[in-house]
Image 1 (spheres, one colour):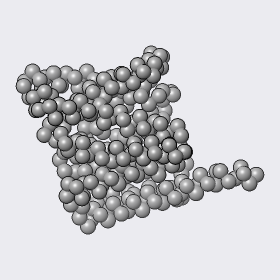
Image 2 (spheres, helix red, strand yellow):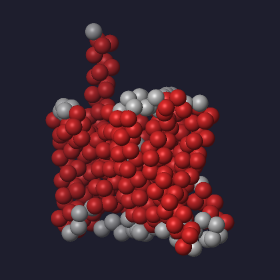
Image 3 (cartoon, rainbow, N blue to C red):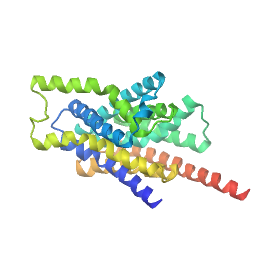
Image 4 (cartoon, helix red, strand yellow):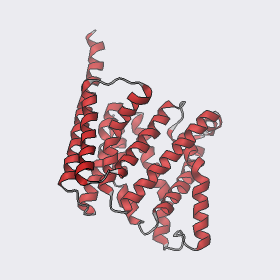
Length: 295
């Protein structure tokens, strides 16, 4: 249990400090960073799959599963591209809002698509979060599109993964990245042919950091996978707020992003919604455990 919590905290802390990593290579264009992330993640994941000897899982995939993974890879690419662009254009705080909203959007999609039922407390949480987003939209005058794109793309990605046949996280991610690898690699080749690529021409530091984008993608996933097999889902649900909380604090206190009163009110409403949702989940899990014991 202790080891699982340590792995989980490690995963979410790494995801939390990811904005600092992307900022370190902000001189590189966001789409070039994205392409390198795809290519170097594929290199690293191929090595991991080789060590795990799990190519057989991938070879057994049906055509319908490949189509789902293609869509999942597209959603993941949209999520990564939006996040990298947001960080390197001074929108870390709004990006963190997307990952605060994400758990509640997962619940909403469960109701809409999977016909799952919610209790009154869960509906209240979703309503309060929606009120927070609406308040920011009305008072600030712009829709928080970065947060909404990040939350929607990742929630839909999670829904697709939930509906798929059992496939390990590394095997699944390897296929997803493989399906978007060709356009990413072609983009880098075109940049290189034009003499506009940063790899090898922007100095050894930038080149090394571009290579490390693969490790920055795979290492938190490795830790998360180790945590998921050791600790309850409810514990993971609590730990997931570490990353957006760190991103929010980094945006405000490290990079000086201004939140403003109206945006802060919207954030507070979302945080209240998350507190309601989390506490409700903990009580529900406790009842699930104690009822069989009482019987």
